Length: 307
Ligand code: SF4
Ligand code: SF4
Ligand code: SF4
Image 1: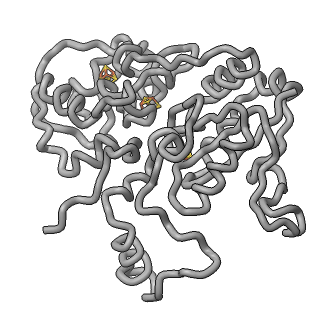
Image 2: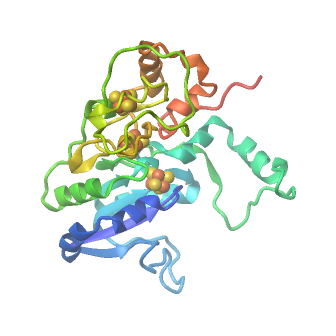
């Protein structure tokens, strides 16, 4: 029986729902798992059930799952406690792996974020920045691996049920989990004709396809003029079927599986890919945020210089 501790930091909760979405394979896994700490599921308090302890404690576990990036000082303490108590630590989902959507905030200084939220927001009465009983924000959003060593990364926003099963099974069997080093394009069945296009279309405009016909009769969405981040995104979201999740729905890839390699720069990769089909990357007004939409931690997004 493997003991599991799970924590959530700066997140939406979607990666926890992915665990519930595992479906039937969860029935095979559950008899091997014991959840000892999971705020979304288990009422286990940090300082003892009646607050009797003076030090934050998480039970010892074989597997630690963390979703969400580190956004405040409390997250840092919990991440360290998870690392201390869990034999194998897993970054669950793209927020934990690369900062995810919350790391778009890394384009702004923390003081400017407080200013905008508490004093400049059109819909909120101006107020002081709260400073009691809530942990202060860190200077930016950190991927979990920037704060404590992480053993396994399960990318995706949300990550996929198949990948969670694969990751947990690998840990239970003592085997390594190797992520794909291909791009989403490598697993995309659409037709590439290498014909240039000049104008970017809005993603909500429907792409050209014939209902009922297979995807290998559809022209590559980027060659149809959509901003598809398949060239700069790690493959793997398609599970056993292989075909990327969004492409199956005739939607362009938004890059949620993160960069193909640790040191890759999605902005550089996408500028090259767009140019290769004749699209001028300058048509995209907010390039750093758009191309690093899911991967703003690890230094990929920084505050813009003040003008
Ligand atoms: S990776 Fe996506 S689904 Fe998962 S917690 Fe972050 S925002 Fe939510
Ligand atoms: S750019 Fe998008 S649509 Fe085109 S091959 Fe790559 S993933 Fe598929
Ligand atoms: S196609 Fe791209 S955005 Fe869609 S699930 Fe796959 S990696 Fe994420």
